[in-house]
Length: 349
Figure (cartoon, rainbow, N blue to C red):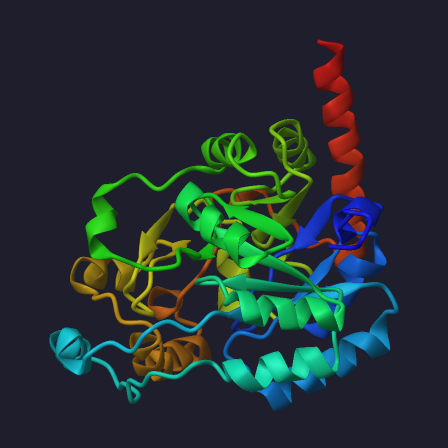
């Protein structure tokens, strides 16, 4: 946050943030296109080494001079092998598996990279950095945005010194951004975006970016009316030509398939299109991230190579049927126009 109390959202021509879709869809081309169109592109660094992240940063800077951001996965704790041994035995009976392992996703090296070569915004998923880590990034000139799913998580982010909160509703595609994934919480309804926005706007004073199930200008307008400063969209961009979405995933998004939350592919709750693998393994999948993510990598790769959507993690939000194949810049402009129309319509009633 600048000395004037403003954040980059206040200067954006369009209140649209590109969600950082790790694992393939996120590309420098997609990030640059959204930023160049007046929104804020976020580049996913999840699952990348610091070296690969640096290369993608350089590529994005070659494509645009507009501000953009980078998303990091906040590391959690390792899971004892005994907690997921039976699940691996279940999967191993019918699939080739990789080696389950814990790592920090090159956390320290990526932080050092972003301090040495700062970007406008650094966002965080799966937890909140320490106050010291946030202060280091801010001193380098970056805003820090923390993704939260509850008021309790928001308080932690505020106390750590975050500049902006990303409020992720349960409608969102991909991984839940919860700081701690717990089986005990499965029996509690996760907060939808509208409910979460109302709770946060009455309990914290930081700017809020709304995320989850937003696929149209009317959806963006609704979040702005509810108090958000901008809207973050991911699924809406999955079918854009600039996205690195794999062909199996790209073909599945937009079809009339329901989504659901599952740990079956990665050991952490995530929303994706329902398929056979989810149906067969959700009930027994443990909390074990990133160990299960690495263990299932070969079976997912084999399914993608075979064009088999039944054994691929098809991450998508609840409004995936509304996606289009427009180029990202055109989509940003179309959504912005729809947002203005929706707001005018609402005010006229």
